[in-house]
Image 1 (cartoon, rainbow, N blue to C red):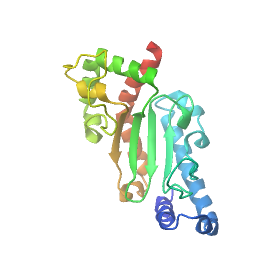
Image 2 (cartoon, rainbow, N blue to C red):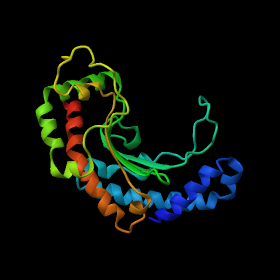
Image 3 (cartoon, rainbow, N blue to C red):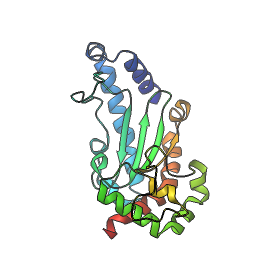
Image 4 (cartoon, rainbow, N blue to C red):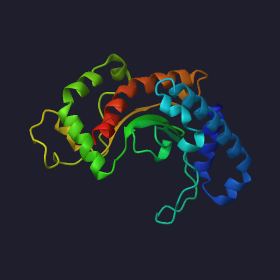
Length: 222
């Protein structure tokens, strides 16, 4: 993947987010899009060794369109300033299952995994699983490969209090306050431009897999 070219295009797009500029640079966009799709195809192939269910996915199942839906937004800029892909069983970007996310944006590249704001019944089931199996989750988060990249679930979306039905003095009360069960880590532009980026990125994916497996067990218990 020519990540440097992709990041340069996205940086230019962020400074010229209008249809006239985009049409003038449509050929460059299509080249970057094709390059990103090829990378995601290789990523899916590697991920299929971790979970055969992922092998049926195509880049189109996982990659988000660059075109923004501006109908209900005050921000009327027509294009996203990043490339994003979510690899998850049962539908890719449309899946409710925990999966893996790659975000390419100049200065803001990142890896993320897990479940982002699941619907209420699933969220309740995940919280119950976390409460009932907190010892197992502690062990998973103590693993050396996990600690290399993460410390805990992200704290972007949290309640102020433990939700009803769970003890307020639970030792891991913060886990129960989560509305999203995600892990993330920043990637530098230099990292994503390295020729061995996929190999290094797969190390992060493997480190996150036990947590995704833990979250996806919820579907078997619902």
